[in-house]
Length: 146
Image 1 (tube, rainbow, N blue to C red):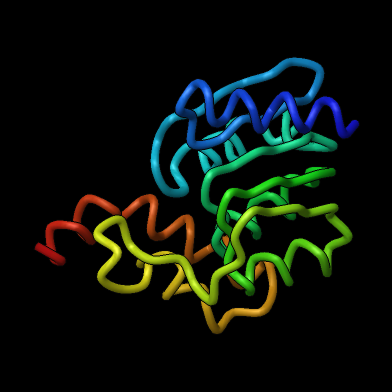
Image 2: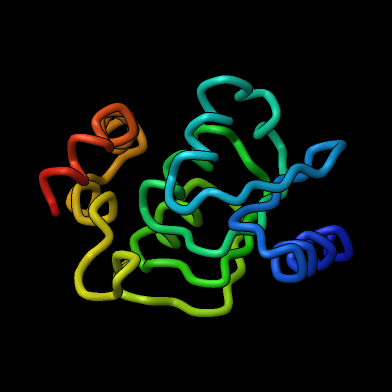
């Protein structure tokens, strides 16, 4: 198991991926934020069940999706404390390089918007509708921010 995770981490870094998921096959993803994982969770949730995941940034929203998907192991280059707590409380083996209080936005000027929206929620069932709403309304959200 550890060998596979090390291979996923290597692929994450060498191929410049945002996320790498392995479950009898290895898939790579490149979008920033929650989009790729949300699409995987909603279109092919069985691929996440028992999967191993290496991800660049894991905030609370991503952690909730990983819990909902039933992943087995997670590695994150950077993970927020609330995400780590959610994953470990769900019994998911989690390792990371950097633990942070919260995930910042892409400009590093403030909170990541999804992290901020999910921060006070405690359960996966409370977080997932927020993620869904964000993904569905993202275009209008970012237009309002600019």
